[in-house]
Length: 502
Image (tube, rainbow, N blue to C red; front, side):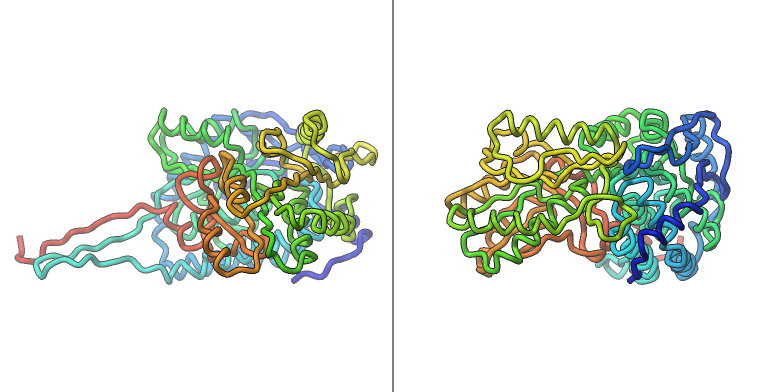
């Protein structure tokens, strides 16, 4: 685990960072065919960090051509699994070597607190690449139970060219979640980072070449969704798209697939995740700590944020006071100050959207308990951690994903009512359940409609557990675990008749 530096030291590193700003195609930074620029804004200050070169459909076509050529050459796809493993392990080592630089770069362009980047995002990025690298030569294919006259071999083969479309809330972690299993399987990969957070992906591609990944195998195309994401989704020679982001955009990728080559689509979309606290929950101090973390981590800009706190009426007052106390521990301010747990909101658009949800909640009669205001800091985009009570199921704040440091307390009188309310959403990504009963943990954990249910904690599992959602939260596969490798491979049956020579 990295040791945190001082604010002064992080600022000194930030002042010396050389920003990568051009697309990375065929093993090197290249001029975009589009010839346009995108401003990358520091959301903590409102200042322009740099201008990143934006790509368009012509760049997508070029990157696909390069990727397909690299795949067909077999230089990566046909390497022995142990050789691909060694290269990816070296990439993980290079990321670790450059960890602090990458953490500062991510903090600058995303507004994330440096402590989170250093202690969570970078270590998990490194572990993800290591884990999938180590899995490469340990995933076995199968032989079917055929009779004595035949052999049935069931094998995995790489898809070919994989497109990965990333969100802005966890730029490095989501990059690793997608490229690690895709590269492990022998694919060529084209990444479209979020337009707000392109530079860490560009830097990783540079390190990938240093690690030994052949040119053309990992390509990074900065740009806006209609200019890069849509052409990738519609491209006839991309074999799969893995997307993390809004459900609205996820639907579009399904349409693009149907209108093109029926490419495989893997979606990890939004969530309106509940924290369900039953009347028998022990240690309410601990519950409050988990609940606040689950709601506020990464400024609530997290698809698994527990934005609905569903509490049994018998403990609501006690828990509410403990939650209010825990919220005081979350300082908001300069992301490069390691004493701050909360940083800036990613963009003016998202900032205005969050404040709009807060106003709607007030208008609909929710009781504002804590926060609810913007924090004035020059042109920086900061919002107070915000808690509402007296929230009812029909309120907007109980139904729609806010994606900000805002959560809502809802009160129930029975366990059954709590589970019904928790499931009363079009999403199903994550849920947390707090109870002292092993029976209830199993019974209600199974009843909650979510891809991940954490009991007596907030969590998403770890790299070894599959991550994805029910209902509008997910489609087509799972990130993490060995299941992630299935997303980026085709399954082939090779049936060999051995009864006689032909």
